[in-house]
Length: 232
Length: 248
Image 1 (cartoon, rainbow over the protein chains, first blue to last red):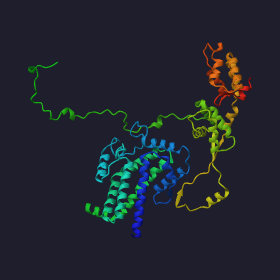
Image 2 (cartoon, rainbow over the protein chains, first blue to last red):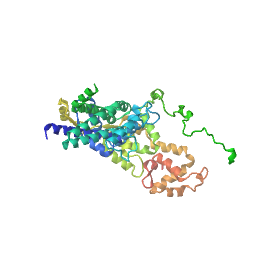
Image 3 (cartoon, rainbow over the protein chains, first blue to last red):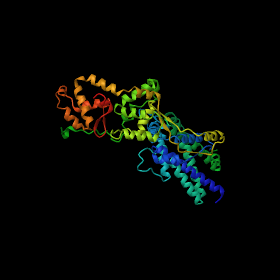
Image 4 (cartoon, rainbow over the protein chains, first blue to last red):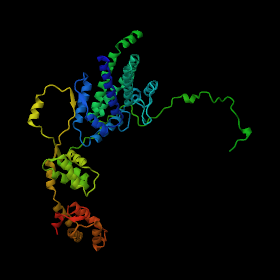
């Protein structure tokens, strides 16, 4: 195994972890176990992306000042940010792609149908315990995590062609879905979040997706050039 | 009502599968609760009133009359800075015979929000300060470190309210206000001074007295008022306090 492959593998492992952490933070409120896990993390200070750096600093600052009611405080902020009071479609940063890409900010619109088709094509179905739409950000991030995991397995098996195909899937999903609506979600998180914790989540999410886009464009440089030539 | 066969006519032109023109008309759906533009709530929200620290603390006591004594005791305990764990232990003792849904953490938080308590961080050593100020380079990674336990101290506003409390005067005001029942109050204070008593014991010496038949009063009425003046205290049974003894 070459040094380049080791580095690529470790990068993908890092992406798997980050996608997983972000998905967990959007899926449900933080519990004591996850809070303790985050307090044990090391937060890089200079990743090259200002949003990521800001996100990590805010996380570190908040987690350095936890107290007995932190879990309650975070649960309240989670409800404030993502659930709201439900009076209208502007009461919270609703974490569903349909809300941000449909004219009337409704749930279960075309975006949900599209991602559902993509999941099924990839042989993935939502868990029975998940009662929300499939275009929830937690699921979209988990989907990227699954693709990253499959890519890592393909590389370890020496199947480069499969790995490239999976990289392309990740890139396409990132372009066509996540980066199409997450910036709007993040702007709303900034508006509603009272704790630095959820403000940090917003910054880290958009920063990480930006760096992931750069990474995939770098990996798929040749493939993307071929696509552009084909279109011309 | 059944139609006779000769009354029933079939419309031979009717095609059940044909498009119904009326269905093609766009139905106007009345949207309930949906607003095209986001509501600008900040324009309608009235400004929050501003209170002085003393007013905030007084309001807290008014909102929590059942916890007032405990809150005053916490403030009194924190005249000098007290470690967090010591404050929590004190609250647990205060609430040992006085069940509350409020944990020590919540009571501390309420007092802090009202400006009655202040949290003091542990002071850094001079050596550590010099070291931290000398660091120029940002570390590669940030790690969360355990903070040393700080302490809580009562604010000047809170202490002024504690000093202003005068349970003995409150008791004298009660006995003057309720002069009709002076004999009952003194009887209860003497009774609970001999030995701690249950509520049943107190009811037994009060409920049948002619003085409490019209309007009808029971032992609990007098116990409640004496407790609020700190004349009686509950610790599995009712006992007369120093404040209560001072009027005997």
